[in-house]
Image 1 (tube, rainbow, N blue to C red):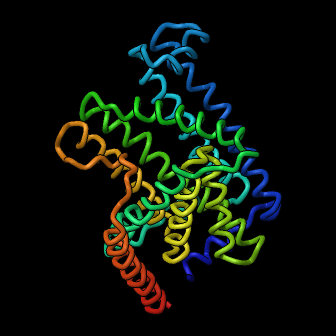
Image 2: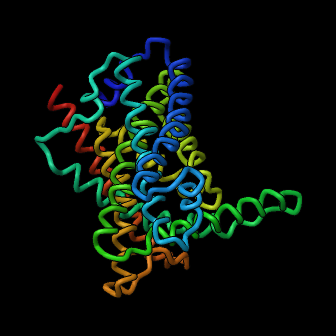
Image 3: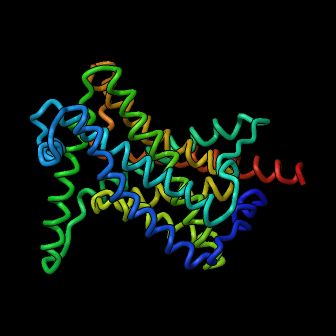
Length: 313
């Protein structure tokens, strides 16, 4: 884990605790600021006032609404998860930004391993997706359950709307906004910065991975996807930990989001018969098969990087 430990040597000027708090506050502030900024180009594009532009973000009957939602999501994510963390790295760590994006160009095998491991994980994680979606609460938590179900339905309506692609061009736009920008930005923030700062605090890599995955899942404010997203965040964290490459965690994040979008596009255009959004139970024998394959690939992935470190070292 020599390469991963190099990230732990990066210190915030105010220490990991205050630095982590400052980083979180910066990102929340960035989300607000860049959401406001994202409205400005829409006002110019549609020649509308502020109130009319804000209406476009909720009125999905207006053909301009999809452009408005794509724009605000792109600008908000780009600002809060990429620009703000990069600003923080430069200002409060004095570290080269390239440190977080370094790639070992000598070997291509890790790219294949990560892609296949992520695919196997997606199949196995489908069990937890179904379980979490059908989770029932006791009577005394009925208020929370109703809120969570309402929130889930609202998110589903927006997701269905944004993934109802009118053509290949919209798919490419969605890949940029839903896969590439979050893949880079969320991994830079949650794994590259938060996970490593947490490990400096708790002195335990596994605790740091799972706590940062908890933050990652909670940030999305989607209770009926909380558990599978928690496991997904842990997967990204362990890929970063085992390989010492944040870029590989970004690749896994991109593949997870991007594969789902591409499969939706193919299904809605009658090019494949499988609907990836279908939450029906995946056969246990299928889950078991991909669990075994994924475990074997993970073992080879870890062994590959240990051998690489021994060779370098």
